[in-house]
Image (cartoon, rainbow, N blue to C red; front, side, top):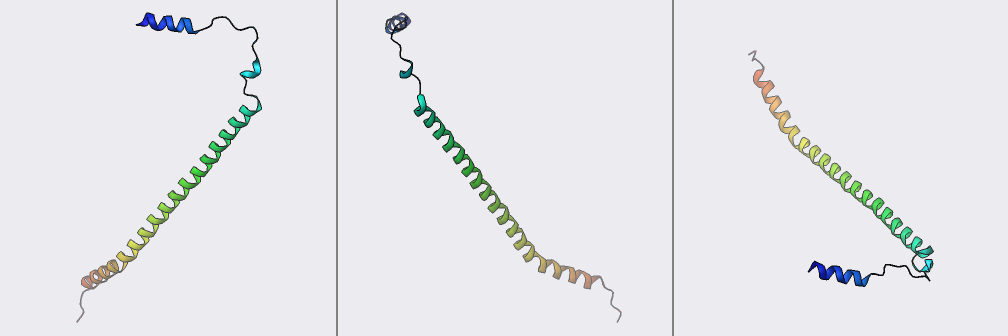
Amino acid sequence: MNVLYTAIVMLATTPTPQPNFNENSVTPTWVGFAATFGVAAIVVLLCIDMVRRVRRVRYRGEIREQLEAERDAAEREPAERDAAERDAAAEKPRTD
């Protein structure tokens, strides 16, 4: 099987260069440069946009956590204050 593949490859290739080689037929010219530059510019803009979106999501998460912590603290504060007042009242000796 390998012999068959080798024979096909050997028959398909042309080992000698052709004498009338035109360099313009294989070089990208300014069109290739413009296409490459366009793709690179799009990639850079997409990366900048992605970083901006990720940062925005992270900040929203941090703010959400902070608001939840403040809300939990506000809910706990009256209960803790009542418990502290009861403890202080229980520890006071009566002077009747």
